[in-house]
Image (cartoon, rainbow, N blue to C red; front, side, top):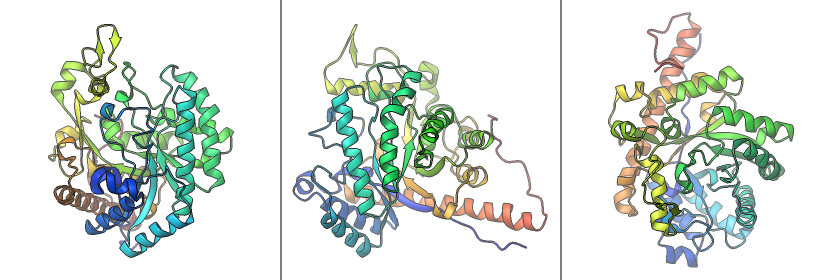
Amino acid sequence: MTEFKPRPMKLSVLTAALQELTPREQREADPDLAVEEWLEFARQMDCPHIELSTALHPSESDVPAAALLDPVANTLDLRQPFGPKRAARLRHAMQATGVGLSDLAYFDNMLASDDSVRRKKHELMLRVFDAAVLLGTDAVTGFVGRNPLLEMDANLAMFEQVFVPLLKEAKARGLTFRVEQCPMPGWNITDKWHNNIAYAPGPWIALHRICERHGVGDQFRIHYDPSHAILMGQDSRSVFQYLKDAGYNFLINGFHVKGQVIDSRGISGWGYGGQTMQRGDWHGARPSTDPVEQQNAWKKQTVFCEHELPGTARHDPLAYLQNRTVDWLDHQLAARELLDIAPDDTFLVVEHEYPKARIQDKARLKPILAGSIAFTRAIDAAAAAMYSLQHEVLASQGIAVQGVGREAYRS
């Protein structure tokens, strides 16, 4: 007979939620102050870990800040060398606050078409790898990206040529690279929707097979974000079932906790391809050169949906059935039932991109984030209890589970 032993996942929060926790003029002068203050902020919100975000500094980025949907999130500033002295300072801050790192995050296009731009991004990624080692974490999360000048099969070849060497560098440092699957439709002003080739299970498997050929299969994993599945008309249970059916349910080993609320009116007007014309990022036959207008490329996505910070959207069973918002409880159950994970060694990272609540004011944002973190903890605790009760306790006594529940591939 099996005892009741629920296994909750480990909570974290992405520091991009509040870029301006530390005013930029202060962190420019003291690049590690922002990390120290974020560790303390997480402690105050009762969140035991942070996903530490870094990025190319706004002065170095190839994308103007005005063209970005979200501000640049370089909480960890890596323009200057990050050596043992800086690492010791941050390790001391982690010890003092009792807040650790789930991973480091650098979300950028690693398949950029311009050689010099791509080289700059790869150089920063290597610095992120080194910082991860010095800070004692074993994973880095980011994108693969896409060369928009090439079609998908050509991007697979480019992945093998330029991304696999990054994975070899990760392997040399004992790191795993977790790929988030956002398709990044607004990343450029073309009408291309999939600007990150690692956007769904089919591509993940194709990419992993390339990695296996080069001995870096264990370095390539997925940091699954259910908001992007909803964006593409999928649901988590079916995605996880597909991976299990294909023998690749080991690929997911981390989660972003972020939702997506689909607007039926927007779907009626534009469909899941989003707004394809008259967005404001083109003028007639020519693309706009104004970075502010280039941000309108994101209407490919925002015309029919809006990101959800977990806990801020209404409970809507009908939307769950239509795959138009995230069924959080079933998401956490399905992860335990279908994926090859150890729940108590897996991170749930709260990611805040709900536009109306994306407040760059610590006092106002703190109760919002604290509430979402509490919601995420409670939902996962419920899922852990249900899984242990149904799949361990009842199963060990030969007692059937009641009902049917949500089924994969059915909507």
